[in-house]
Length: 226
Image (cartoon, rainbow, N blue to C red; front, side):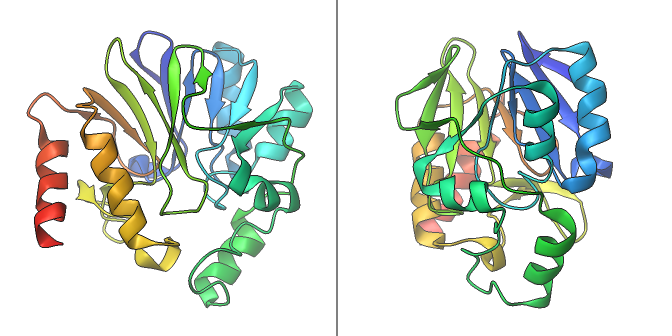
């Protein structure tokens, strides 16, 4: 676990930051895959949490949410459009190819049990000083979290900072295989770039210090490509 800003901690759950979760002002954001529990548990012993929120209910983000919430007695929060998948645990159901071998593998080996959602989050809500931003596309109820005072952005899977096949660092759109609506996701990406974030925390790939505006340049290129 690494502190990356005031009350913001990065927890890499797989080698080369291929799957990540975060603690932001006492809120655990995402929970990796089913076998991520021990790493998260170790971090929670160092930095306590009072609640758990999902950027979206995909199997590499809700994998041990049920265990976390049960063992630490914390509420689970997500967008209302993620509630069904979060509560049933059928988290690959919105994939464009939800019967593919990859989707079946993730559902069987990565996804965790469902857990009741205590509260839903919508655009403009706050988790501490982090504002909730609705960023649909990768999933219908995907949300991001932004702290205005220092420009920290928790982006989930609106973009990745690695090639998911090679694990080489670099900005990419999320794979179409797991993205509900690519065009809507690009619109969400444009919305986030207009915030001029300074530190960007991805579900996949290393944290990006955006001093050189590489994120905005990436989004401008995507926009021009149409």
